[in-house]
Image 1 (cartoon, one colour):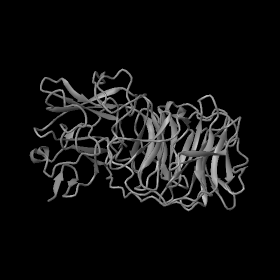
Image 2 (cartoon, one colour):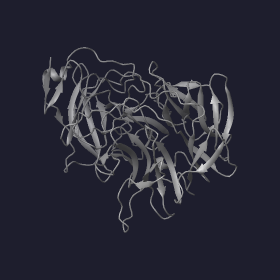
Image 3 (spheres, helix red, strand yellow):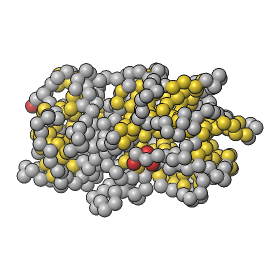
Image 4 (cartoon, helix red, strand yellow):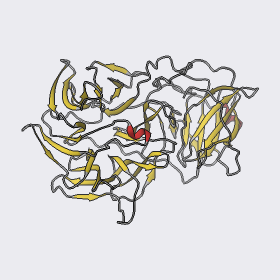
Length: 486
């Protein structure tokens, strides 16, 4: 059975479009094979490193930094990228033949992205910049399949995610939130793991999110978010206000990351994070897997001390020093080995300015029951000036379903209302729908353990035309008093 929904919205027996509105699955396939314990290591040495500074639009390397090559056999380090005032953010290509990094030729330059051929040591700029141009900072480059890359570019609202070809063409915006986002890994299934604040678009603790390489399907990796200070209606399993950052996918598909002064993992069978038995240290990043029982770590005993590199054996719970420098932070370690190329994500976006949201049942939630019966959904957006704009309401059917259309690549949020117009559940943060995206969600802030019922939602039995909640130039800006869960 196939139903034509509004403007080219197609739903078949197998749902097409992105399933799950904001929280979803992650890392359910191996990312790469095991790397040799004797593999060379590439890392950054910097006088000062501030891991989460970019999430507030600040400088992670205020005094610059340099990329070094560590010969694991000879136990010696050597400068890998000479001729730059600063070179950081190394990322090895899937065939281990080239290296992406962000660098500054001189101290007054903006951060720009370069690629080094590791055999010839030749360096080229990825993006063309004229001599009289002052470009925006571009940082944290990661290789994508099909000769593409993802990176973060500085904007007036913070760092935004973008993708482009490795020759600097076909630039595509991937994020549309009024705050910074930083890519940290490309998962085996092709999705980009990035860190931003919670709630998304807010200024709280750091959290890990996912987005496809065409800007669609944005969601939390898991829904057990860090606690929000002063929030009395937060998720029951959000145990602390410490943020999550620096995630890397392991060979078994788990994502390993830093959570405050500890390490943790996301594993597909579990709806919440699982603790990792490791020393209580200040970590600069998540673990880099060397083999099934061995991790490469960047850590220090206290925030005022410098980060060092060590090798941690998860089976024996023992560690050994790899590289240390008493005057510099040693961070951003990567293994110089070939790795599995992630799957290419086949984009299903249409050439539209809008996107469609189909909610199957807003009553389905991993949190406490709704505060009342939801009969309408109100949408809000942020306009170009950053003001909250009310987009109007659409009906919620008796089975909890609704179907709306809204402007693509625009920050939006949902507010559920009862018959009296009172809020029964709302999002605190912002999400977006990509232009041409068809988005299906199971429920209201549901966890990854949720699945939809095998039935046609009532809203589609009533109409196959989505309610028009597009951003209009004449919309009135309003202040929101919504209080909600995500």
